[in-house]
Length: 265
Ligand SMILES: C[S@@+](CC[C@H](N)C(=O)[O-])C[C@H]1O[C@@H](n2cnc3c(N)ncnc32)[C@H](O)[C@@H]1O
Image 1 (tube, rainbow, N blue to C red):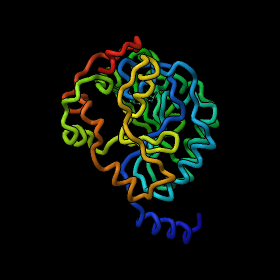
Image 2: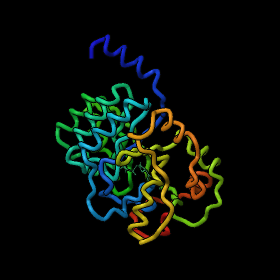
Image 3: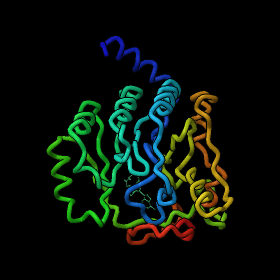
Image 4: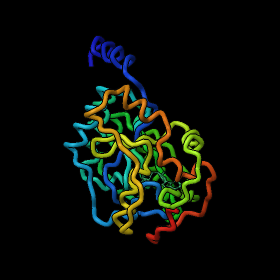
């Protein structure tokens, strides 16, 4: 980008409504499947990849409406997507000034091709590595691989998990209180819509357990203006009344999901 183009881009961006955070799925399935996963990934029984063309349209449309401080590409396990490099490139093109992370459990990091590491470098994308107990013996090797590639990274201890209570029948949480406890929120972009949090994937639990739990409302990014989208995301949703998770967190040592409904209650 020339200096003039950069300056114009910056000016246009200054006037755009801003949200602090966005996360999005490259695929819905996972190769680890944690108990009480906040994205309900263990309940995704078929490989489910996000379509690159649809994502390109979505992220470009969004970039015309909203500025975003931090974007996290995840899933499911994002490194399972054969077009992971394209997703990274498209995201960086749409959001040249945002902080972008790829969030991974690291299981595949040692097998990734040079192209992957090169794309991270060229696109200034950082790694968020969630460190799970089963990989303990590989921690040092994985860390060395990331360092050798000179990619900035954040490693998060994932040995303790929280019970995500979005599939229960207890509606006693004060939505305002739950929303406040969520800090910057966890806005999710999924198939052309923005959602306040990953509870939007509760539809996976409905499918898996043949249930009919309420599903949070999503806002169509093609229909609404940036201001409207920002305003929807800046307040609690009725679904927050199920979310004891953030107000009274209950933790447990990480384990693999047994795909029992109680994990999300
Ligand atoms: C849903 S995962 C998807 C990305 C990738 N597969 C990974 O494991 O990093 C995104 C993040 O959410 C965290 N997470 C998911 N469910 C959680 C829970 N119930 N308690 C705490 N952290 C959770 C994971 O540890 C990870 O850091």
